[in-house]
Amino acid sequence: MSFQAVVFYILSAILIFAGFRVVTAKNPVHAALYLVLAFFTASGHWLLLQAEFLAIALVLVYVGAVTVLFLFVVMMLDINVEKLRAGFWSHFPQAAIVALIMMAEIILVLSSPEAGLSKVQPLADTMAKISNVKVLGSQLYTTYLLPFEAAAVILLLAMVAAIGITQRQRKDSKAMDPGMQVRVRRDDRVRIVKMDAVKPEAAAASESNNEQQA
Image (tube, rainbow, N blue to C red; front, side, top):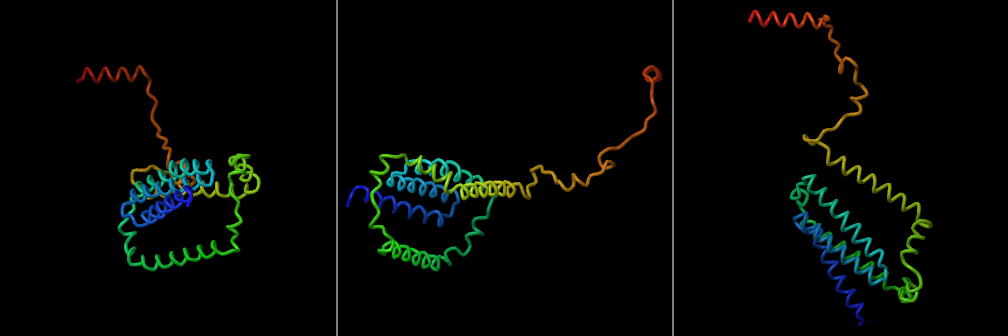
């Protein structure tokens, strides 16, 4: 067994353990930390495939942004974790059976001769001549331009929805209702008061008289 195969199996074992702890950890913060471990381990798989850009992007984007956003959302929403986890272990056997069936199906598909994994050539000679960043950029902005733009719009909508959820039903937040602003009337905001004009000399004289009488 080669050194790369040993590293692959070690990283795979860590990744499976981290993924299992993400869904079984009682504390959401601990689950997020295990998610960080899973992302770092997955970046190691990308490095084994000589895709350095994808490995760095996985660490920077997911660990540096998505996980931090997840932590902020968990802390701001104040989710009752115990209520959400009610009945988790009672349904765990069924979920484990489904997971084992899916794993067996994946192994059968990948191990079949029709998958063509035995015909895959190593990437060392190819990646030494060209840059994987250049290949990824050319494919992303030419062949997969429409799915890339659609994913960007979906992420934007998710960000706006997350902000809207955090601001909902909060007493300390200040928000304006556009409907009330449209239906507002002048009498509701402006009040005209009629007063008699007073000359400055007369006002000063009245003040001096008041002081003398006092």
